Length: 611
Image (tube, one colour):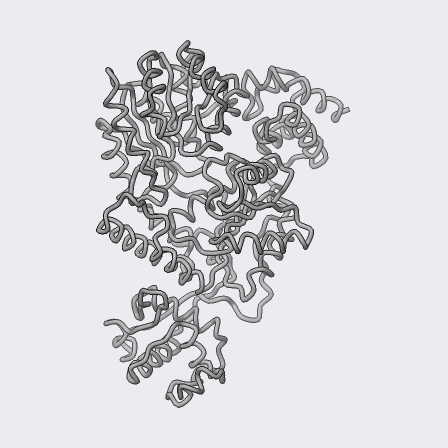
């Protein structure tokens, strides 16, 4: 069978997505490859299809147990012999899997990088023919990546220890130009074929909100999403606990995940979410890598992440099935200070690094935090800003982010900008400096005790923007910082200072225009209303019945519902209304194994529905 036959037989698709065919062809030609592909673009197909066409076994290096288990369950459902080796196995399971692998019973074997140097695994590699070694989440190999794992450095040594050299393929969803170069160099790939299919996830809507009350904002969003499945990310365990308790009191189907929980509770809570027993997961960034749950309709960031790489990866867990989804980040200035503290504390910096390397990583983290902050405060297209960060050009107007949605208008803020810079200048004349909120309060004319006790109400700029809200003053100030007319100092308490460009603004040599929220207009946010899916023209009643059947079959097989079929496959069934096995095979996502297992149940339901 050729690659298209394999794709149809096991995965139920007739066409390859962008980049998949080229990567598969190069692997089959014996060439190393590096694929930079966004979440949901089908990275796994790029190594699973050639693995089935090559002699021997393919080893997939994977960083997390949950990722391995999810992939293996999905492969077995598709009729592919696969297994994993990790610390979750009993001794009996481990030795049974190792023996089966030596007897060539698997085409794909998932392993953690730590296993590569063990005696048992070295023995295994000497007794099987390894056709390919695939490195999943390949950015983990780079110390400049957001999830550096020292164990990934063992992969190149393992390759060198073999008597022959298998194909070395590597895949990741997030890699800047620097990280991309690092991956190939550290893995010691031979003249790799490298392709970046693009970071743009057109089905995702990106939004940044700056609410005064984040808890209320979360409640409003969840009410709009009407019981759909989603993740809420928080920076700290404390925030996870408090938010989860609050949502539970309001009657939402919610669970939690963070490193402070026991292994048993984390596993139970993760299963509750994956198996749709709970619809909302509140978690730290410890949750998510390798979670292949396809029906996540929204991701909310309660706190701003430390860098755009992490944000893109976490937000990208929404809409994996290609359906429309919303990614909302709730920003506040306190998020910046928290992340600065976490970077200085350096809790996630590898202890094996020298002091010089640790400091270098911290400086890089501070630089990435700056770009993350600019993303949250920019009034330009959010999608264009993010794609530009990853080295990709795009239109300056996407029409599908909060800055392009029509809730903003371009305003001339030159006068307001001059007032803000002038205030910073007057404060500096007194050999003082303050943070954003304090400066905004001075300009607004606040009568709080801190301002009055320090005599700041005697500044000539005190109260000169009393007609503007503090929130709007901060928005303009953030824009001036982004454009270099002001700068935020580093440290636990960031203060606003002037730059070389400040004088040009004060002299009236430049005009400042920016997008600001329209005032006194009842604009409506685009959310996941039911009409999101109207374009598919399917029967709601049939879709509901198919979901009930899918959930029943998933429970009987002890697998997550999306492993049986994604919602996208159910909608395709609604459109095509298959009543025979042959017609069922024409549904997107239905391969031979799933047709054998499920066609009678689903076609019988559809036949009865049509009657």
